Length: 276
Image (cartoon, rainbow, N blue to C red; front, side, top):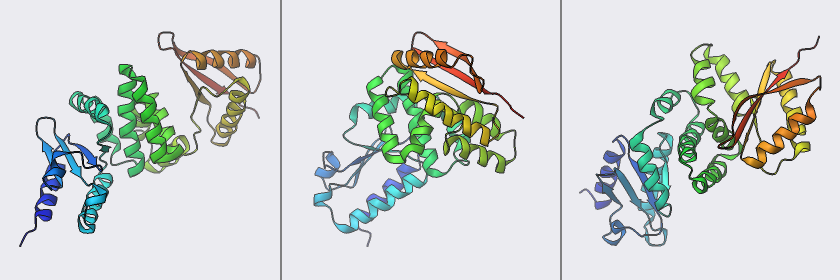
Protein backbone atom coordinates (compact mmCIF):
# COMPACT_ATOMS: atom_id res chain seq x y z
CA UNK A 1 0.00 0.00 0.00
CA UNK A 2 1.33 3.44 -0.96
CA UNK A 3 1.89 5.72 2.03
CA UNK A 4 1.05 9.46 2.11
CA UNK A 5 4.81 10.15 2.33
CA UNK A 6 5.45 8.19 -0.89
CA UNK A 7 2.67 10.13 -2.63
CA UNK A 8 4.20 13.44 -1.53
CA UNK A 9 7.68 12.40 -2.66
CA UNK A 10 6.41 11.35 -6.10
CA UNK A 11 4.61 14.68 -6.47
CA UNK A 12 7.72 16.64 -5.47
CA UNK A 13 9.80 14.83 -8.09
CA UNK A 14 7.19 15.62 -10.77
CA UNK A 15 7.26 19.33 -9.93
CA UNK A 16 11.07 19.36 -9.86
CA UNK A 17 11.07 18.24 -13.50
CA UNK A 18 9.27 21.43 -14.56
CA UNK A 19 11.41 24.26 -15.90
CA UNK A 20 11.77 27.51 -13.97
CA UNK A 21 10.77 26.07 -10.59
CA UNK A 22 11.74 27.95 -7.43
CA UNK A 23 12.27 25.59 -4.48
CA UNK A 24 11.73 26.88 -0.93
CA UNK A 25 12.78 24.95 2.16
CA UNK A 26 10.63 25.61 5.23
CA UNK A 27 12.27 24.32 8.42
CA UNK A 28 10.14 26.39 10.80
CA UNK A 29 6.78 24.93 9.92
CA UNK A 30 5.28 28.25 8.79
CA UNK A 31 3.51 27.00 5.66
CA UNK A 32 -0.04 25.71 5.27
CA UNK A 33 1.40 22.38 4.11
CA UNK A 34 2.78 21.78 7.60
CA UNK A 35 -0.60 22.56 9.17
CA UNK A 36 -2.29 19.79 7.18
CA UNK A 37 0.60 17.36 7.55
CA UNK A 38 1.82 17.53 3.96
CA UNK A 39 5.45 17.48 2.91
CA UNK A 40 5.03 20.14 0.22
CA UNK A 41 2.88 22.85 -1.34
CA UNK A 42 2.82 23.97 -4.98
CA UNK A 43 1.97 27.40 -6.42
CA UNK A 44 1.37 26.84 -10.15
CA UNK A 45 1.17 30.52 -11.12
CA UNK A 46 4.67 31.39 -9.88
CA UNK A 47 6.03 27.82 -10.09
CA UNK A 48 7.03 27.78 -6.41
CA UNK A 49 7.53 24.41 -4.73
CA UNK A 50 7.75 24.61 -0.93
CA UNK A 51 9.18 21.60 0.91
CA UNK A 52 8.10 21.60 4.55
CA UNK A 53 10.30 20.00 7.17
CA UNK A 54 9.78 21.33 10.71
CA UNK A 55 12.72 19.52 12.30
CA UNK A 56 11.27 19.28 15.80
CA UNK A 57 8.09 17.49 14.63
CA UNK A 58 9.29 15.27 11.79
CA UNK A 59 9.94 11.53 11.72
CA UNK A 60 13.36 10.21 10.81
CA UNK A 61 11.92 8.55 7.70
CA UNK A 62 10.55 11.84 6.42
CA UNK A 63 13.81 13.63 7.19
CA UNK A 64 15.78 11.01 5.26
CA UNK A 65 13.44 11.34 2.27
CA UNK A 66 13.72 15.13 2.24
CA UNK A 67 17.52 15.09 2.53
CA UNK A 68 17.65 12.80 -0.53
CA UNK A 69 15.50 15.31 -2.42
CA UNK A 70 17.74 18.19 -1.33
CA UNK A 71 20.80 16.25 -2.50
CA UNK A 72 19.17 15.69 -5.89
CA UNK A 73 18.30 19.39 -6.24
CA UNK A 74 21.89 20.28 -5.47
CA UNK A 75 23.37 17.67 -7.83
CA UNK A 76 21.07 18.81 -10.63
CA UNK A 77 22.34 22.38 -10.27
CA UNK A 78 19.19 23.72 -8.60
CA UNK A 79 18.93 26.44 -5.96
CA UNK A 80 17.18 25.97 -2.63
CA UNK A 81 15.91 29.04 -0.76
CA UNK A 82 15.00 29.38 2.90
CA UNK A 83 11.43 30.45 3.65
CA UNK A 84 12.76 33.37 5.75
CA UNK A 85 14.03 35.16 2.62
CA UNK A 86 10.55 36.03 1.32
CA UNK A 87 11.47 39.42 -0.19
CA UNK A 88 14.42 37.86 -2.01
CA UNK A 89 12.21 35.08 -3.35
CA UNK A 90 9.89 37.60 -4.96
CA UNK A 91 12.84 39.22 -6.74
CA UNK A 92 14.18 35.82 -7.76
CA UNK A 93 10.79 35.01 -9.31
CA UNK A 94 11.02 38.21 -11.37
CA UNK A 95 14.56 37.29 -12.39
CA UNK A 96 13.44 33.86 -13.58
CA UNK A 97 10.63 35.38 -15.66
CA UNK A 98 13.06 37.76 -17.37
CA UNK A 99 15.53 34.86 -17.80
CA UNK A 100 18.49 37.09 -18.83
CA UNK A 101 21.25 34.55 -18.11
CA UNK A 102 19.71 31.26 -19.21
CA UNK A 103 21.88 30.93 -22.32
CA UNK A 104 25.10 31.44 -20.37
CA UNK A 105 24.03 29.05 -17.59
CA UNK A 106 23.06 26.34 -20.08
CA UNK A 107 26.45 26.76 -21.75
CA UNK A 108 28.42 26.29 -18.52
CA UNK A 109 26.25 23.61 -16.83
CA UNK A 110 27.98 20.61 -18.50
CA UNK A 111 31.41 22.24 -18.21
CA UNK A 112 31.81 23.36 -14.58
CA UNK A 113 32.07 21.32 -11.36
CA UNK A 114 28.66 21.23 -9.67
CA UNK A 115 29.63 23.55 -6.78
CA UNK A 116 31.14 26.07 -9.19
CA UNK A 117 27.98 25.97 -11.31
CA UNK A 118 25.74 26.54 -8.28
CA UNK A 119 27.95 29.43 -7.19
CA UNK A 120 27.68 30.85 -10.72
CA UNK A 121 23.87 30.60 -10.66
CA UNK A 122 23.69 32.58 -7.42
CA UNK A 123 26.28 35.01 -8.78
CA UNK A 124 24.19 35.65 -11.90
CA UNK A 125 21.26 36.55 -9.65
CA UNK A 126 23.58 38.72 -7.55
CA UNK A 127 24.61 40.58 -10.72
CA UNK A 128 20.96 41.05 -11.66
CA UNK A 129 20.24 42.60 -8.26
CA UNK A 130 23.35 44.76 -8.54
CA UNK A 131 22.19 46.17 -11.87
CA UNK A 132 18.78 46.93 -10.34
CA UNK A 133 20.47 48.82 -7.50
CA UNK A 134 19.37 46.48 -4.68
CA UNK A 135 22.58 46.97 -2.69
CA UNK A 136 21.38 45.28 0.51
CA UNK A 137 20.54 42.08 -1.35
CA UNK A 138 23.87 42.16 -3.20
CA UNK A 139 25.90 42.11 0.01
CA UNK A 140 23.67 39.41 1.45
CA UNK A 141 24.13 37.22 -1.63
CA UNK A 142 27.89 37.74 -1.57
CA UNK A 143 27.95 36.57 2.04
CA UNK A 144 25.73 33.57 1.21
CA UNK A 145 27.95 32.55 -1.69
CA UNK A 146 31.14 32.88 0.33
CA UNK A 147 29.66 31.01 3.31
CA UNK A 148 28.44 28.17 1.12
CA UNK A 149 31.26 27.90 -1.42
CA UNK A 150 34.23 29.51 0.37
CA UNK A 151 36.79 31.84 -1.22
CA UNK A 152 36.41 30.03 -4.52
CA UNK A 153 32.71 30.91 -4.60
CA UNK A 154 33.49 34.50 -3.66
CA UNK A 155 35.92 34.71 -6.57
CA UNK A 156 33.30 33.25 -8.94
CA UNK A 157 30.88 35.96 -7.78
CA UNK A 158 33.42 38.70 -8.50
CA UNK A 159 34.36 37.22 -11.89
CA UNK A 160 30.70 36.83 -12.83
CA UNK A 161 29.83 40.40 -11.89
CA UNK A 162 32.77 41.66 -13.95
CA UNK A 163 31.64 39.67 -17.01
CA UNK A 164 34.44 37.11 -17.21
CA UNK A 165 32.12 34.13 -17.72
CA UNK A 166 30.00 35.72 -20.46
CA UNK A 167 32.99 37.13 -22.32
CA UNK A 168 36.45 35.71 -21.71
CA UNK A 169 35.75 32.18 -20.43
CA UNK A 170 32.91 31.35 -22.82
CA UNK A 171 34.88 32.56 -25.82
CA UNK A 172 38.02 30.74 -24.72
CA UNK A 173 36.20 27.42 -24.24
CA UNK A 174 35.15 27.54 -27.90
CA UNK A 175 38.68 28.26 -29.14
CA UNK A 176 41.10 26.02 -27.25
CA UNK A 177 41.37 22.29 -26.39
CA UNK A 178 39.32 21.16 -23.38
CA UNK A 179 42.33 20.26 -21.22
CA UNK A 180 43.88 23.68 -21.81
CA UNK A 181 40.60 25.32 -20.85
CA UNK A 182 40.47 23.31 -17.59
CA UNK A 183 43.97 24.47 -16.71
CA UNK A 184 43.18 28.09 -17.55
CA UNK A 185 39.85 27.96 -15.70
CA UNK A 186 41.52 26.63 -12.56
CA UNK A 187 44.17 29.31 -12.81
CA UNK A 188 41.49 32.02 -13.06
CA UNK A 189 38.99 30.64 -10.52
CA UNK A 190 41.11 28.63 -8.12
CA UNK A 191 44.37 30.57 -8.11
CA UNK A 192 42.83 34.04 -8.73
CA UNK A 193 45.54 34.79 -11.28
CA UNK A 194 43.47 36.78 -13.79
CA UNK A 195 41.87 39.57 -11.79
CA UNK A 196 42.23 41.49 -8.52
CA UNK A 197 39.08 42.94 -6.94
CA UNK A 198 39.58 45.86 -4.58
CA UNK A 199 37.54 45.89 -1.36
CA UNK A 200 36.96 48.62 1.21
CA UNK A 201 39.56 47.35 3.71
CA UNK A 202 42.42 47.83 1.25
CA UNK A 203 44.68 50.88 1.29
CA UNK A 204 47.39 51.75 -1.21
CA UNK A 205 49.97 49.55 0.54
CA UNK A 206 47.59 46.56 0.60
CA UNK A 207 46.80 46.99 -3.11
CA UNK A 208 50.54 47.22 -3.83
CA UNK A 209 51.14 43.92 -2.01
CA UNK A 210 48.28 42.16 -3.80
CA UNK A 211 49.35 43.46 -7.20
CA UNK A 212 52.85 42.13 -6.49
CA UNK A 213 51.31 38.69 -5.89
CA UNK A 214 49.33 39.01 -9.11
CA UNK A 215 52.52 39.97 -10.94
CA UNK A 216 54.26 36.82 -9.70
CA UNK A 217 51.29 34.69 -10.80
CA UNK A 218 51.28 36.35 -14.22
CA UNK A 219 54.98 35.59 -14.57
CA UNK A 220 54.45 31.99 -13.44
CA UNK A 221 51.62 31.39 -15.93
CA UNK A 222 53.26 33.40 -18.75
CA UNK A 223 50.40 35.90 -18.93
CA UNK A 224 50.98 39.24 -20.58
CA UNK A 225 48.51 41.11 -18.39
CA UNK A 226 45.92 40.95 -15.63
CA UNK A 227 43.12 43.25 -14.48
CA UNK A 228 42.26 45.25 -11.38
CA UNK A 229 38.63 46.11 -10.61
CA UNK A 230 37.41 48.76 -8.22
CA UNK A 231 33.77 49.58 -7.43
CA UNK A 232 32.40 52.27 -5.14
CA UNK A 233 33.68 55.79 -4.58
CA UNK A 234 36.21 54.89 -1.87
CA UNK A 235 37.64 51.93 -3.77
CA UNK A 236 37.95 53.93 -6.99
CA UNK A 237 39.72 56.73 -5.13
CA UNK A 238 42.16 54.33 -3.44
CA UNK A 239 42.88 52.53 -6.71
CA UNK A 240 43.62 55.85 -8.44
CA UNK A 241 46.02 56.75 -5.64
CA UNK A 242 47.76 53.41 -6.13
CA UNK A 243 48.04 53.95 -9.89
CA UNK A 244 49.57 57.36 -9.28
CA UNK A 245 52.08 55.89 -6.82
CA UNK A 246 53.17 53.28 -9.39
CA UNK A 247 53.59 55.61 -12.35
CA UNK A 248 57.02 55.17 -13.90
CA UNK A 249 57.76 51.81 -12.28
CA UNK A 250 59.47 49.33 -14.59
CA UNK A 251 57.97 46.01 -13.51
CA UNK A 252 54.59 46.68 -15.09
CA UNK A 253 52.50 49.41 -16.63
CA UNK A 254 48.93 50.23 -15.64
CA UNK A 255 46.32 51.88 -17.80
CA UNK A 256 42.62 52.46 -17.21
CA UNK A 257 40.52 50.42 -19.62
CA UNK A 258 37.10 51.45 -18.38
CA UNK A 259 35.59 53.92 -15.94
CA UNK A 260 31.99 54.68 -15.05
CA UNK A 261 31.65 57.74 -12.80
CA UNK A 262 27.94 57.06 -12.21
CA UNK A 263 28.42 53.75 -10.38
CA UNK A 264 31.32 54.63 -9.76
CA UNK A 265 33.56 51.83 -11.06
CA UNK A 266 36.96 51.45 -12.66
CA UNK A 267 38.79 48.65 -14.49
CA UNK A 268 42.54 48.70 -15.09
CA UNK A 269 44.83 46.51 -17.15
CA UNK A 270 48.29 45.75 -15.81
CA UNK A 271 50.74 44.92 -18.60
CA UNK A 272 53.55 42.67 -17.42
CA UNK A 273 56.79 43.80 -19.03
CA UNK A 274 58.73 40.93 -20.49
CA UNK A 275 62.35 40.63 -19.44
CA UNK A 276 65.08 38.42 -20.88
